[in-house]
Image 1 (cartoon, one colour):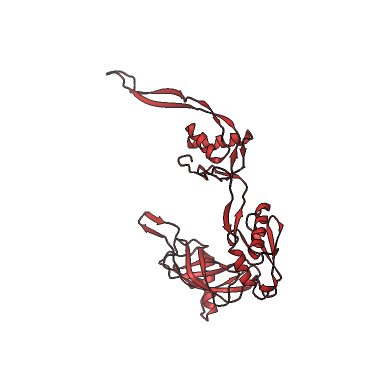
Image 2 (spheres, one colour):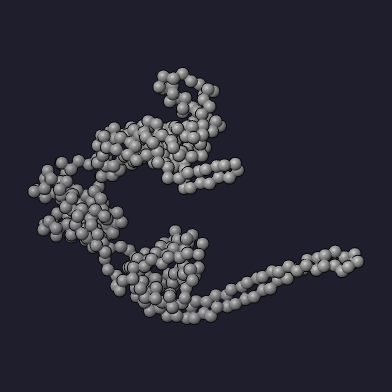
Length: 363
């Protein structure tokens, strides 16, 4: 768990704001993608499809064949080259009929691999039950599984594949926003923050040299369409999303205990604090010795277990960290010679002492 630790820190002399475009930190309210899902079949597998115990695959294949005019019963199906799959795709907000989408395909049965398979025509529907796209085409797996005798070798996940541009949009996204008659355009900030919202509004007002933007709360900014941009709202959106804004973010330290990763932002500050670091290492070694019975003796050979216990205490020291930014914090911890397994506990202790001025989030 603690074999690898990466400390990613913005070594900044003082907290500063980063600049970003409006399009990178916010999006237009009402413009969003839709998720699509479908239930289909993959054929052409080399005996790596669903087994005969998976009755769902057999019924799906029989239903598909009967729908095409073939008369067949489940008892007559003995194929291993078919797999039942779930097909998913993302319908963009501005998609139109005829646009092509990438689709993800994943096995739902007991198929061992979808390598070499072809996705058959699959309707993709949204949560409202309406079909918005249809998918079909050869799959790209990016992995394989090979078996010979009692051994096998696998690379990546052969039960999940992708059909590039395998879906065709049949119906437009119902959430597509029409700007033609819009008098106001609302921008939703991805990471709500009152300071950032105010800065976005000020930057937009400066760009248009008039008061057209107003922060409604920490998560949204309303932009009033100027009279000269009526009928040209798309051009207005293009201008707004290209405006550069100095964003503000809350100081935060994120810790992943499973991987030993610690990420600190440049806004993290620390009050003067003293940290003592030391540890006790205990090692137990066991060696077994065989004792052989003497010649012409009725005794039997025995085994003697010998244990050697050693304890070593590392020299600990009290170090004062007088830093005010993350740079000084890192320098102070480096003076302690902190090991990966100790760093997270030190940060938790500093936070508990009230000296770490940041939110501490443990994943």
